[in-house]
Length: 426
Image (cartoon, rainbow, N blue to C red; front, side, top):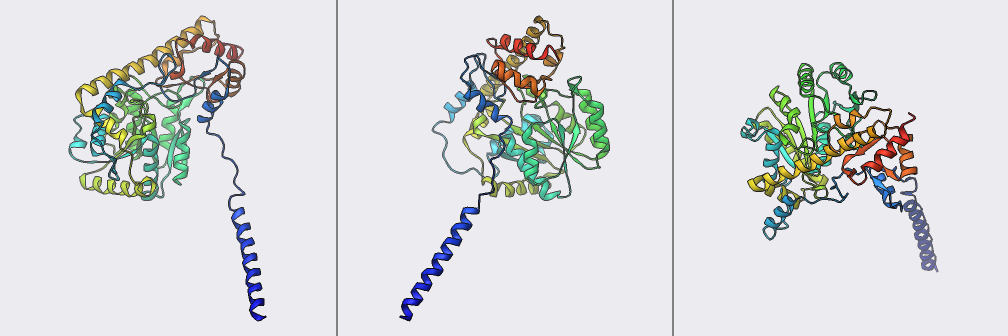
């Protein structure tokens, strides 16, 4: 009898415990709400869901040819042919492909850079430009926990997410002037001068995203000088080297100016845009140090940060980049192909502006050709963008950013007419 009662009590306790556990488990995720859609990726989702045959997507940040099709560069195809059968699936080191990193540093710092020869650069392969920025943000938080990051207004929206999730406090500095649709240089310089000494600044090396507005060479020199006066740390995000002007050397000019002036810098590089390796996620993070000893220490810490994040980077994209940049014939082909991409974008800017002018638009569209790179900051309001979508099935981000890669000879007239219709009463 006593044994039966004990068994029943045990069953009751187990049953009650089970119900409590079920309630606890069912409540773990109940308070979670759906995340807001990414402002850029959401555009592509809406475009794909639109059945209209006239739809146009000028929101995607990826190169398209004049038929609106994705492109695989011939230098990439040839590199893949050469590495086929000569690669294994073993892990790369935490710092990634040494060869790829070495070739990548030459693009940013110069083919014959003394900084490379003196081994003063701590550099690791990263998960494209996003991963490089995130790795640096975590490095900044760990070793300069009292610091904050100054980010331009506007900037690529993910920049804010990256430093936020790394728990680095953010400040902003003036960059774009809405009325002139150009650089607000005076306000930018005031912010640089008025920020605390030794601040971190995020700078776009070329083809500023989303505005396409870059400082002139002389303005870069003034910015560099003021950074030196204030002891600021410049971190360059260079996602469009070669893709902006068609000349990788010209597109790295801002970085070279800061190097000439004696700055220690950080740099994020990516091969998504300039080699079309979007899905391979291949990039590089570099930090210029005072000497080789410091560079060794910094690199070891960057690797330690990478270890719990993703352990080590993927190999295939790194092999492609290494093959292209280390082979004179493939590098020459790449330089030709990246210029073709840049020239097509530049040509579409000219065509869009000319079409708008022929339509008798009362607005000035000089900024379309004054800006550079993949994106044109059109100056259109969110309401005007909404009209483009609802009335003309044209998709772009609501800040009026046009991806010039989505503009073709086949749709530029239609796009210009729609823009003229929604802006002519502005």
